[in-house]
Image 1 (cartoon, rainbow, N blue to C red):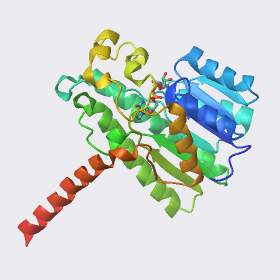
Image 2 (image 1 turned 45 degrees about the horizontal axis):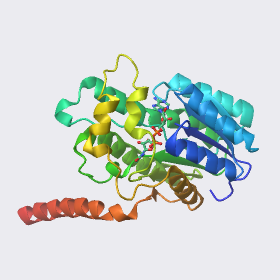
Image 3 (image 1 turned 90 degrees about the horizontal axis):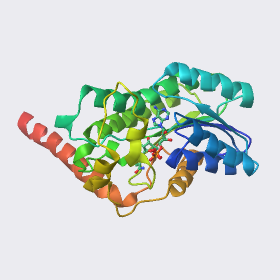
Length: 279
Ligand SMILES: NC(=O)c1ccc[n+]([C@@H]2O[C@H](COP(=O)([O-])OP(=O)(O)OC[C@H]3O[C@@H](n4cnc5c(N)ncnc54)[C@H](O)[C@@H]3O)[C@@H](O)[C@H]2O)c1
């Protein structure tokens, strides 16, 4: 989608990090932006700061685990801005816990935000976007952890949720292309970005268990500053460029290619072994 000025973007997780930066970059490109987040003050703070510099932005309190919240967001976005041309399913949480210690509640929280949040966003907005009968785009924010085993041992559940988002995005892109529907789909797979993702527990709902305390999380070696960490704005700019150029994958950390190569080699090697056995 080349022409962004005057169009409408919806960004979930817009109250912080990559989502807030994406909202600002969309606003700077002349888009009207609907920002959604579970953190009411944070998301209204970002929207207000955009309006202060002349951008058009609305904020809504939305829990992406709830389809009815996204329905309300869609109704409001269409009532106030008349469309959704760019849907950014960005809200996400990171659980840092070895798989052997991951509880059913840990899984439910991780999958309900990171995977069901995307499923609900698509389910609510895509039919409306299709009805607009004009060019549109979907951005799903996954992670490099969804395409390679990054070796951070606590990220099993997180990586599983992100791998599902990658496959969902690939299938959706093919399905829309095959159906002649002019809506592009990009999946974003960043490496480390300087955001509040390591403090995700702040948004874990009561009744879905609890994770490490802030002090435990800070002491975890995985939470140390990773070399190559990018700023949210760098990532947001790369995302918008990927939208303009309709890239299937938006990769922001090219130095992590080795992990993808190693995984591909293991996979192709397994095919070769299977072929050797069957010949
Ligand atoms: N920061 C990184 O290193 C990194 C790397 C790869 C991918 N990502 C992905 O980027 C996306 C954005 O995360 P971030 O790094 O900006 O973290 P962040 O914590 O700064 O922002 C995430 C936002 O999502 C919101 N959120 C959490 N649960 C929600 C829910 N149920 N409903 C609605 N909003 C909810 C939070 O309130 C927060 O504003 C996530 O999907 C994350 O997995 C981050």
